[in-house]
Picture (tube, rainbow, N blue to C red):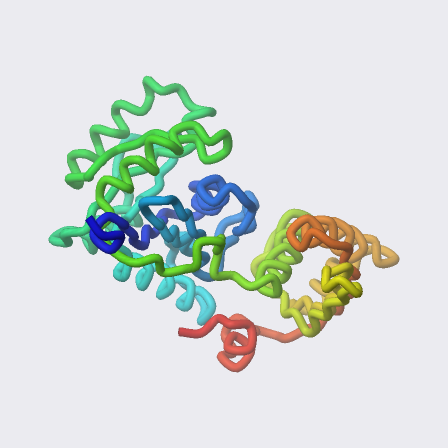
Length: 306
């Protein structure tokens, strides 16, 4: 057999409501932090791809924004991104939590209604089994099995990695013959600039509260690399702008005597250095842009466009 008939590939979308662990699962499958995580809903704003490349297959996992009712242009972009990833994928992973009540709620019903009549495999992934009693899964499995004919139902822990081998094995059963969509050494379609911006936003999510995390965005203004005589990268200098919606939010992000902004910058820099594998100088600026989540020109500049 030729490589073209033996090799299999496909796109696998991860869908589910906010905070079910899609980004944690993506990072676990990739073996590297590619998507930021936080306990706050709607952490993921754009689709993020992680590439798992093996000798006989290439699986492109697509993390999507959490399913929700949009209340702004940004929210509509996020909802559209999730719908497009769902429609264009070869296999769908619907994530739910092991702690869910044993019934199918409206958000999941809408996804399953969209998938009814589709020939694509749909795998129900029950996450966070490490913090829930496995016996409690049976009513939950029964409720979802009655609502949809899933290709498989697989309990996992995205945090510990439990169930990953079983999940990947099940996905590979349903891949079709196809090409390598990305080079063998690829891990993601995200650039270092994009990941750096998200790592900064992750620290804002972790360190601020109420409406502030959802009203902020990060734009990388400058990404300068320095190399030594051997061509090795020895330092990266990044200038980034944090957008917020109100002057009061700006004051909170700066903090007393700049303490909050310093903490955000310090922890973000450490994460960026780990990602870049070299020292990084990070300079943060803050700008107020009222109602930026509904201003299409700003959304376009931030990459939130169709």
